[in-house]
Amino acid sequence: MQAAPLSAYQETLGMIYFARMLDKIRLHAAGHLREDFRDNLGSGLDGRCANFLRVDYADLVDRTLQGGSDEEILRWCFEAGREANEGDIFVWNEFLKKVGWHDGVSEILVRRKQESGLAHRDEIMTMVEYFEFDEGRKS
Image (cartoon, rainbow, N blue to C red; front, side, top):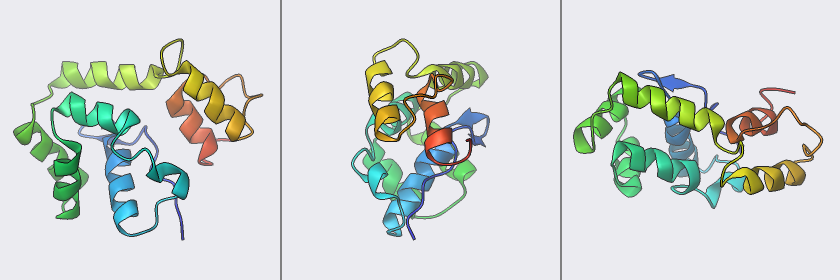
């Protein structure tokens, strides 16, 4: 069965999106990740998250597939890359919640909404909100 990943709003040690990225890695490895997510693994927001943590995405995939909780893997990122403090995580979370709203990703958001039949949904103004509607957590 093919599945969409967890919500981007899911927190790991206060950080949003990280659990979603790990869920995509795990679902893909098990052959259960929805096809429309496969081409962007490691790029887009996954790439930005790995870069924010200063870890190589391929190394993160390897570490994730070794097992462990999301919290353990995020702590590994803090050790292998950089420690993110409360202020760093706040900035990341606020950035992520606004991706697609009047920025360089806005055109992608418009295209994705059109492809998903959501172009008429004016309340969808960010990528994270788009995920919620596209993946069925909001209607």
